[in-house]
Length: 344
Image (spheres, rainbow, N blue to C red):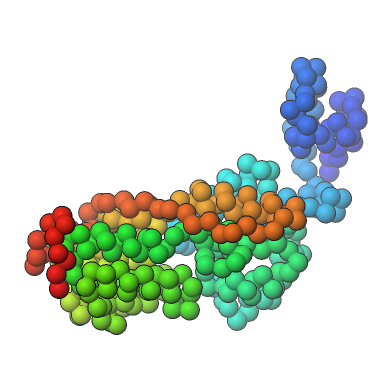
């Protein structure tokens, strides 16, 4: 194994100089002569195929510059999007990611999680919505732990789901829909409780009392959405607001299987703006999440926590409604005129 001392000997400099160059330390203070020497050191390191010993550095500094990122799985495109966003954000600060795939198994999560401290991570971000935030925080104590995009004290930033639900319903009401279904996440989730409360409030403000069967738990999954959507359709709903794109796409599948069309018979709105939303048939009207801003805020707070700073108040990040082709006025009634009554 090539050591720093080997490079230092060939370059005719100290080991500390080699370490500073290869880690990028103090590079802003380099003069022309030192820059030339740094280029020579990097060239020697490349020729000798030098690989840094991260374990030795971790023992020496008590820091690994590695953050664990817990996800449920990697098949969901939204997971890939957030992992890429976190990798870019941490890389800008000289950190790496260690990906943990929990599978959402709540029962054996504690044992799985306790492997992270032995895996050389400085902190952990829990991006698995099916793992209880308190369980993860307790299992990994004293490591700093943040929760991703959920209504919990350990989450530094999340989507404003109350505003998202209000915007989606307002858009569909404006198209003339009066019977609007909702595909939400598990009822135990705090975000789902916010979505359901907002759903009832917005419809009540429009003079609409929704039937209980208008709202269904799609578990943030395509298959579950496909399974529960027929029940929503049987109530006569002409539009469905889904709180994630997978649920929206599952709803579209179920609508077609029922011999109906989107948006001619039933309108559908999603939330995520996954790449699939742009190539689905029809192209999905959905809310675009600020993944980069979410990741940047989590990284900023994680780095602050590593310096011993307390958690800041959570930030609510806004989203954008991307109008495509999956929502239209209901076939049985024209779009509402601006300023006109909602009607029943």
